Image (cartoon, rainbow, N blue to C red; front, side, top):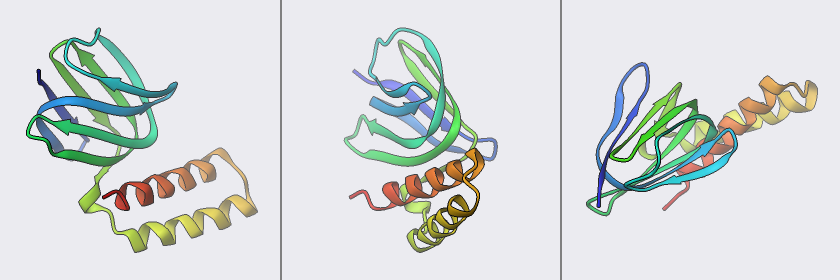
Length: 129
């Protein structure tokens, strides 16, 4: 049984449709959602978002924070920044990872570690088949 799902950023609605499963990285770890899930609101961490659409397609996205609101019939992902798999430039993501590794080596701050995690997430999503 499907439920409505939306992936929204301040700039756009990236995904809107019927899904059967959503997997997201919350601040407390990965969480999977299916129809009938108990209502909740969770903070999202930097990580991969997977949306299994009713038609069998799987949407992969890199999400860089935000919130996921779940009700028994819907999931709304409100992301600070998101990039769908097809939008990610792998070469640019690899350059960003190399720059972030250099930054972490010189100044291991939370901001630099998050920069590295964002780049690694983008690479992971871009390489999914």
